[in-house]
Image 1 (tube, one colour):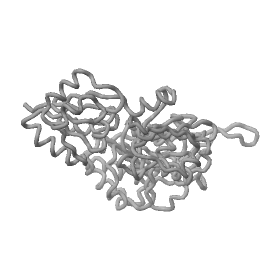
Image 2 (spheres, helix red, strand yellow):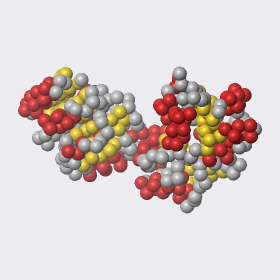
Image 3 (cartoon, one colour):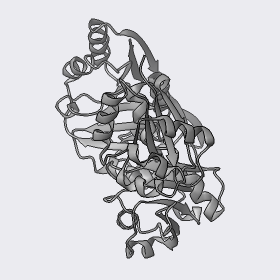
Image 4 (tube, one colour):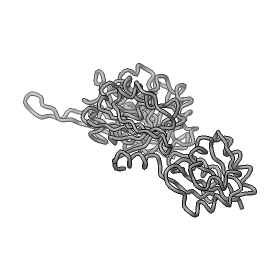
Length: 410
């Protein structure tokens, strides 16, 4: 049986008596040089200092624990709440939750909110600590939640965030930045400033940020008004070339979008289906693939502030290589390469449902044969839509082109 790994959060509160007992019993206490400076403030430090292993990187920390835990219990000192975007998550994945006990301190978010006297309700958290910055995701999250906490690092610093947001959308002038520097240290500092003011400042590490949208009307748009039902007139398109509202609704119903995952829209056109899918959930990542110009999709994405919509300009299936595997695929246009596209996507393990839209009998027959040959269970609907219009002083129904919706499931 593996020995225990005790993960102890520090920074704000005195240690519990049980935690002190654990630290006194563990032959090794692993701590980073930065956190060691914080740990020195605790009254137990002198009693355990001879057993402290100062290790700088996460890789070296885990290698040390893997070797030592075979023969000893080990304590790992962490910052704040180890499960709030912290080292506790990776530790559980590495050693298993049955071998770990976690004793959290306050998270940096709890401490920060208590300082500025704001409640938890409606706040979301994003981490760009050691990750690529995604300004569109930040803006998209703000539109939905008004406030967002952001975990920063040396590269993705508060001033960098502010500059990138201003470059993306100058209209976001009503954002307030709350910058929290070195929380838990003697020189901790809290700065409240506008977007423009933060761009001209530098901040001590470690730090993190809370963004607050003080004037929601300045960033209000269609995306924040409703979840589903964007209309053709709200989507930029040309010459009537757009998946009609009623057809789009049926396609999305057939796709059964997951609450979280990846969806490919192949032959996206103006992006109508991609837009509707992206509006359903921040946890969905939508990839709109189009071999012709993607200018219309880009304009629609910008207008609707859809940070979870990714645009790929290129022909399928060659442009699909390297994309995250999808849970669902919609094919609205194949450019005559339906066979090649289905050959490619049928090999993807995550894919559960593919939906194909077509107007010709040739597309219908080809799609059925190809899907069945690749062991998909197939069902088909034909959608006939007629819309009322006034002509010669009378109200008449005008039929749209019927559309086949072919679904393959496995």
